[in-house]
Amino acid sequence: MPEPPWQELLPSLLKLPIVAYRRRHLLQRLWTSLGVFTGLGRTRIIVTGMPGAGKTFLLDHLVGHANALDWKEPGASAVVESHALRIGEWHQIVRVIPGQTSNQRAEGLNEAFNSDELIGCVHVVDWGYNIPREDLARNNLRARLEQDYQSADIEALRRYNLARELEEFAAVVRRIEEYVLRMKQQFWLAVVATKADLYFGRLRDAHAYYHPEGSGAFSELIKSFHLGVGRHNCPVISAPVSPHAATFEWFGCSVEPHVPGLTAQRALSLSLLHRIADLNEKRRLGQRRG
Image (cartoon, rainbow, N blue to C red; front, side, top):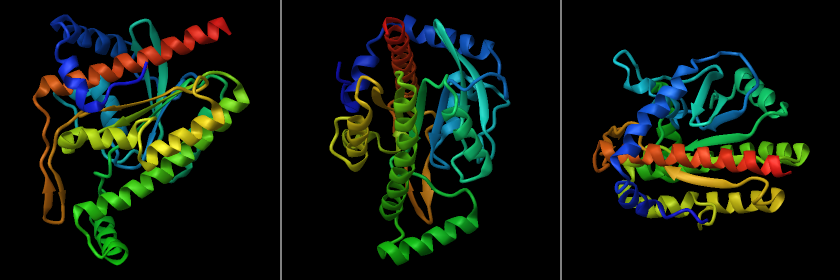
């Protein structure tokens, strides 16, 4: 079944019975009850994406850590982070791979893709709304934008980030393709667009860019990937989320967040959880029939 356009998600999601929102707490309780196991067990799902895309933030939000009173916004992840997560009838060990090029990143990817137990990947993107955390890196990036794009405004920044994001995604899907062809078993890929509050009024454009059947460069890369592995062997979904609405600031320019209420944010997250659970269940049933 084709996935609905992102701009049409909320009207239908917000019509769900209130019990669906109450179940969100049960899902979080089931997830967090398993605890966090660092270095235990084989990796089942990996979370990948550029530095600053919000990988750790997304996972903290989905498991409920971000709701704790003592929770602090995560900084740059230098090491592989491990979580034991459960949704409904399934639970898996999920590892967040650092976005920065490092030995820890290489080791995390190698450990995952050399295993015979990896089943899925959550790849986090942000539609170009990404800035370095360090002041020196920001100043260097602004100088580079002025040289390469003759502008250092937010749109120039987004163009630069989208190009890097595409390179990162290409590297990830190459590893996935190699894995699927070698293991000859089903795999799934979820492209999760964070920071949707910054482009909520342009969800139609973002959807077209990231959707497996869309029209942007990212979509074309997914289509090429499917030609290599086959759609059935690796289904791909895309979904927007807004874990934390915040103003995006870049050298005197800013983009204000906009999401129609906390309920809308929760609805997007709930939809993502259900769709990932559905991917996992379909894979399980497919493996059983195989």
